[in-house]
Amino acid sequence: MRRRAVLAGCACAGFLARSNAFGQAPSTWAMPPRFAPPELASDEGGLWAVMDREENRLKRSAFLLKDQALSEYLAALVCRLAGTHCPDIRVYVMRTPWFNASMAPNGMVQIWSGLLLRLDNEAQLAAILAHELAHYISRHSLERLRDARSRAAFATLMLPFGLLGAIGQLAAMAGKFAFTREQERDADRIGIELMAGAGYDPRQAAEIWTQLLAEVKAGEDAGGDPARSSVLFATHPEPAEREADLRERASAIAGTRELALGADEYQRIVRPLRRSMLEDELRRRRSGESIHLLQRLITKSGDERGELRYFLAEVHRQRGSDNDVQRALELYDAATQSGNPPPELFRGRALLRWQQGDRVVAVADFQRYLELSPQANDADLIRSYLKGN
Image (cartoon, rainbow, N blue to C red; front, side, top):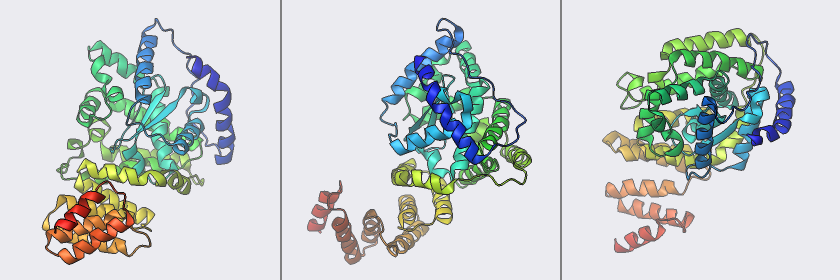
């Protein structure tokens, strides 16, 4: 608890300085005062103590993405949105290739790297953080934990904080202990107020939902019903209703003012981490969703090094139907025309060519891969393979 008191004097100054730069929107909602730390012996204090212990475990997690530039960027953005609550909020990015963010009643925020990969700009990130802050400010997280404990399920609720790699368990937990739809509506409403108050275009909140819905529908498991493959659509308001409501509220708040998107700054921070996020995306093995995502990223951000086309080719190669093989080869070929394609491109194309019996081209691509990446983990295996053939 003392940690929060010490931070109070430094973080809010950054918020005030940034809010002047971005401009303030007229608001119909007032930020409540900062919460006093609960007494440890109280009901709320006991819940906070549990979450503090889980936060300490999270800090030691192998899934924690440790990047100083990203951490500083998120801390500044939270302060811009949270106002006087800023000293009480800590943000952690977990290397998990799914779209998710959550906030605990003690001020701990988790963002999964799959979410960062899918956002276009800082305004969209602000929308996510503002939505989670709205749950915190409205005490939704506390209500959720109290309800779970009253149903003798509190230990199960702790799974997302202690077992971040267990994706199946996390999905089951999220469906069972999600916020009510009315709480989600409240968080949407307050979130866009916080966004606009910090100078961000609140219309970007609806864009996130639209993009995610299109991606989930592109997946093989959706079957026309996004709720079948994504817990977000099972526990949030109906997609069409939510999108329309977000757009209507955001347009009313934004009016004709020019508000920030922050695309360049967001890409500057996230782009150095994109390669590892894309590698994790491949491991999801959700080819329909990944193809849709990568096609959108290529359209939105360009592909100056052929990196995105390489990963799109890899998704098609993994899926492996007849059409996928041809499409993968086309994408590999297109990516080689870029100025500095990833070395792994030549390995992927070599594997396909070898399977098709085109050994001459395959050997040339394997050799090119070894020239560009002589210390690769599989370099010795490929060398021995080439010698034996």
